[in-house]
Image: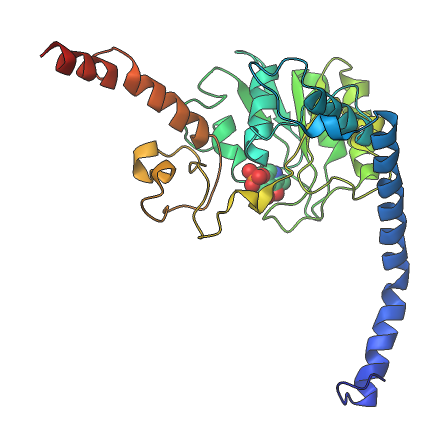
Length: 302
Ligand SMILES: Cc1ncc(COP(=O)(O)O)c(C=O)c1O
């Protein structure tokens, strides 16, 4: 009994009992946390993280020791051969998009084995209409629905992979807005085993958003070839409630103009629109018929 509130004894007892019932789970979380904490410390030691690595660089930033070491630490933490951790990857969607566009070529097939992917990835693939999607570039997409209990249909996965031999199998670890359970390493391993035995050359890519440091074992150790995730989530929100220069997925930059900070953006989703913003700004400067560059040139000539 603490001296601050006069809780009924029944409530105190119920709270105590609830804590006892959860004790095993909390202990497991502590164990995973402790393991990953020590792993990170070891990584910092191993790569000799030092003050000089936090100094700014000039020019092109080649041989930036801080950046290179950060990549090594990420690779160590996730048991990967290599890693790319960049603040310019503005969101999970952006990071996943870069990975997908980096690996898939026209005519390739991407097979998602965890039902329909997270909402913001859909326009990237072209499941929902979006100019510049993978579909636009001739990348084929198919998916395997989850079973009624939300688990992965391993039998269907094995059959589809053997038949299609897709360039990539895509796994989404956490549930997003769906009600299915998020995948644990054990289930990710089962998927990888099925895929690799049916088609060893198929690349297994994992959307690891929200999965980082949640278990001791890592996806790269159970058969995943490449994974991407998000470390920033809400960090793009400004103090005044404005978003950074993220653009709504697939939206035209002119619709919200968040870069100017002159009005409250009318969206709260992030995605490949940020590329569009950049691309369309460059386009405006181009000397084509529509380009601002051409108009500027005309003004100068006048
Ligand atoms: C499973 C999953 N994938 C991708 C994303 C996209 O991440 P971001 O919102 O940083 O673009 C999320 C975001 O919640 C997610 O839950």
